[in-house]
Image (cartoon, rainbow, N blue to C red; front, side, top):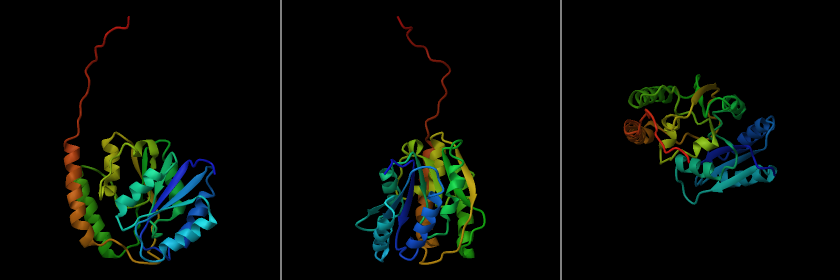
Length: 243
């Protein structure tokens, strides 16, 4: 197989019923791209039939690679493992729940010649009202404290230039702040309107209780990092003249 130009990273945790559907949509989209691709599924310690579903998908498409954790380590760990294993110069990540469509991947890729990171923006979210309200409040607080203007930090569908992503040091939970971390490194970030659909199978792994406090603590860490950034502008540089 040719060295891939594009790597798609998909963290998986108990998404058995969604995997065959997701693979079908991913393959259909990637087949329209004029470049070699790979799909890296990172099984985050699933205890349902997800591992078997992934192995069956791998038998049907050699572009699929599978990383399997011994125990559940969380979304940040799954994303980092996928990033490290990826071989493409461009990396895309999305969740396995099919609420974001793989068909929107080309919309993000179209922005990367000009930008270093393209973030999906779920302008018409199809989640229960309590999740939409909590996300709206969380985005407002996050933007206020981090002095950012990101409309939808929670959308998993994102695309990156690999060379830029390698400059970012990620910690647990910090995947929520990737646009801010990119901008702190001087990279260009753009938001792209993408579709969003209700969950077809399975249940969400996140709720207000398991996101609120950890996310706020992480936000304070990012705020501290931005305030402590080293900034300077040279007035001039005087060097020895060559002989």
